[in-house]
Each structure stands twice: as C-alpha cells, then as structure tokens.
Amino acid sequence: MAIRCCQNPSCHMLLHRLRRVNFCISPKIHLARKRDFQNPRHALSFPKEELGTYDLVAVRFVSVATTRGEWGLAIDSILTLLKPGGYLQWIDSCNVNLYNSVAGTSRAANQEMFGAWGASFQSREDLVIGMMIRDAGPVSRVREAVLNERGLKDVHEDVFASDRLPEMRDVGSKNMIMCWKQALEDLVKLGGTGWTEERVEKVCEEAFKEIDAGLYHSLDQVCIIGRKP
Image (tube, rainbow, N blue to C red; front, side, top):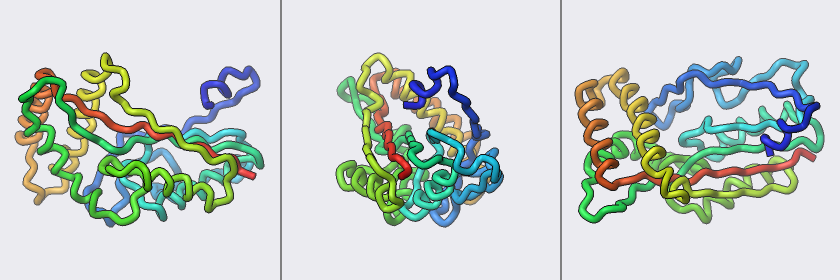
C-alpha cells in the first residue's frame, strides 16, 4: 500500500526515522528508546499542523514486545495524524523460531542468545506483537481487535514467513544475529546480568558458525491495516 501511494506523483512523504534502538529487558520499561519522536513513550505527540492531514501512516518495525494497552496507546496517537478515510498500515515482526536444514546442527549458541531476554517477553501479559509470541491464531485476532476497538474499518492482517524464500534464509538469519547482538550489548551496559563483552562476542561467533552449518531463523512478518472512518 505504501509503495503504491509513493508512486502517485502528488504523494508527499514525511518520515519519522528511528535512531539505533536500545532494548531494556525489564518488562516494566518501554523497550524502544532514543527515538526521533518528540515523546519517547508510545503515546507520541505530533505538531498541531500535522494532525488530520495524512492519507496514510505506515509504521515499520518499532515494536519488539508490546502489550495490548501499549500498542493501543501508540495507535491512538498515530490516528490523530490521519484524515477521515485515511489508512494506518503497521508492519512488524514476531514468532522467532529456529530450524535445522541439516540434521545434527548445533543450536546451543543461538538458543543462549534467545534465552538471555526471551523469558522477560514471555512473562509479559497480553502481548499482541512480540518476538517470542508462539500462538499466531488467537494473537492475530487480538491484533485485529485492537484496531477494531478504536473504530477502524476494513481491518485486515497478512502474515508472511521470513523463510518462505530459501535463498534468503542465510542472510535473514545472520541479520537476526546482529539484532540480538545489539540487544545483548545493552544487557552488558545494564550490568548484573551475567553478560560481558567477551561473552557476547564468543556467543555471536558460535551462532554464526551454527548458521553456516545449516541452522536458520524464521519469524513472521505481520502487516495489518485499517481505515479511519
């Protein structure tokens, strides 16, 4: 949808870019910080002159583990930007899994990286978008319900597996390792987690070797849209 809009010669695009995202592990702390937005919380504030002026707001990969309430606050703020009849398009990732393409491939290093912060996500209540969500059926209905509860019309969700193209498995898996590495580096900064710079480097090195040996990551790319009445 966003691509089709950009192909329109009358289209005007305004980007709110995220800087490097820092992750905190405590479920009581918002996970995404240091944004270019005026307000670092999910409840964003926008300049008055921009309110009600957009035909489409496209959100990309800003959530890692978001509860129903947190996600709702973000949507409430974003909807203030839309004209009546305008669309919200939200694309995010969830449901990380590990698979073997070669029998006997080690999974230890990748599982160690997942275990460092996955437990905090799993313990959060009422997740609608999260890297550790496992049951896509009921969760999908919850995501659509969050938009429906806010009065959006024509709500629809598509879910695509990142490994649907075998030739992309290696690249996507190694990109995922770099994302996990950034999160682990923030664990080091927090202190008291048992993670050190040396441990992070060692685990990442072993994780890359596991991928080269036939291990790969898969996650769901979720695209959900809704129209403001």
